[in-house]
Amino acid sequence: MRLTMVGTGYVGLVTGVCLANSGNEVTCLDVDPEKIAKLEKDICPIYEPGLTELMVKNRQAGRLQYTLDKKKAYQSAQMIFICVGTPSDDKGHTDMTYVDTAAADIALAIKELGPDAEPKIVVVKSTVPVGTTFRVKQRIKEIVGDIPFHVADNPEFLKEGDAVNDFNKPDRVVVGVESEEVGEKFKDLYDPFVRNGHPVFIMDVLSAEMVKYASNNFLATKISFINEMANLCEAYGANINRVREGMCSDTRIGHAFLHPGLGYGGSCFPKDTLACIMMGDKAGVTTQVSNAVHGTNERQRNLFFNKILAHFGGEAGLQGKRLAFWGLAFKPRTDDIRKAPALTLIRKALGYGAVCQGFDPVAADNVRKEMGDTLSLCDDMYQCARDCDALIISTDWPEFKSPDFEKLGQVMKSKVIFDGRNLYRRQHLGEIGFHYYSVGRSPVKPV
Ligand SMILES: NC(=O)c1ccc[n+]([C@@H]2O[C@H](COP(=O)([O-])OP(=O)(O)OC[C@H]3O[C@@H](n4cnc5c(N)ncnc54)[C@H](O)[C@@H]3O)[C@@H](O)[C@H]2O)c1
Image 1 (cartoon, helix red, strand yellow):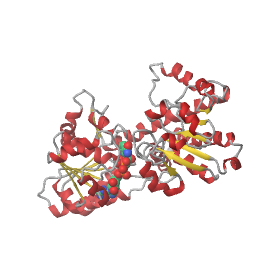
Image 2 (cartoon, helix red, strand yellow):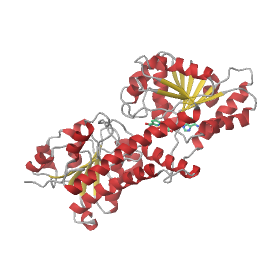
Image 3 (cartoon, rainbow, N blue to C red):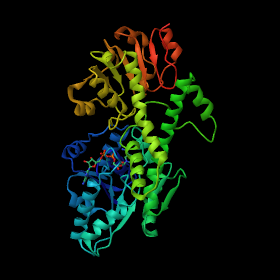
Image 4 (cartoon, rainbow, N blue to C red):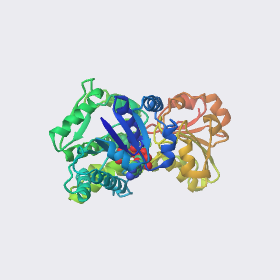
């Protein structure tokens, strides 16, 4: 099939590349000339393991091209996937500008082709408030009149850092359609990806849109829940790691997404939880669970930061202290720094006069663009910790899991670690002379 991806971000690029790899002819469209220039040189504008290799292979095979030319991209496609950003403000209002612009551009291209062209299928792949696909349909219809076209919703469930694998082997594919005929097209498109027997669910458009919010909101709920349990553990001297083991071995509960930490970040969970709250407000439906999940998540970073403050004797104590931060993106194996917990902590620390230096295996360039020279970025994790009064760990990159503690102790000014991912054995850290704080476990002092 001839497909166009609107937007070459984490979702659009991965989707386009993987669908080209299954034999489709794919055009990836973006409005950002810098991104397209990089892509045309086979440079991947995001960090995503395995993506560059597939980009090169499929471009060389002639199945994948990149363009800024909207008209050509839209007119040549049988299916158009809208994969643009849908950011939200702090209250959860979704910014529909990018979706609306794409819809208007698509409509103009369809109109110019006229009524005899094959009807296009316009697919909303972005995560959108329920009803958006019909809003897109309405916007296109206002411009094209009676020229036929179809709409569909096809939410994406890939995880950054493992996106290629997730797209190629999805747990499920969800598609919302208005006709059986369009549903069949999606079954053909996704057939190569579900040979493992995983299902393609064809359903109505509104339910498909809601599946995405319900899924992300549930995962966010698990994270806030375990963080609340961790906080109770700390208050009563229990150890959340032991509690997790005891709790999660129950097959009804399971282990996934029940790791305590600094709360969720990234471009999806925070906005999708807020979007549910906003959709509830608009419809007069109370969303107490979503509200609590969001509130718990916001508090979690503050609680962690309060441990840092308390260690240094309060706000004034942070003035002039040098802090090292390991892990700056919102999670490991991605360069995405949107709503990253580390950046919240860094901004707070800077606000109290601390001097901050950071290390991340892949996110430094994005941090530099966002934070300028407010913090120093290091190429090496030990260099980052040099002369620091404390080390703060925000993500669990593999290299952070077993550092050379002797070297770390030698380069740091004070042997103090605030671990937001519970990477180390507490007792051991105390024995080798560290002051060690983690989440849901009592702090240890050097023995
Ligand atoms: N990032 C994820 O892990 C993930 C997972 C599932 C779903 N989603 C959802 O997918 C959507 C996209 O997310 P993302 O992280 O890929 O966003 P992103 O910000 O990485 O990428 C969006 C891209 O769209 C481009 N764009 C904007 N307007 C355009 C237009 N009119 N024409 C062509 N290109 C245009 C931008 O330049 C940008 O490159 C969001 O709704 C998000 O919630 C994201």
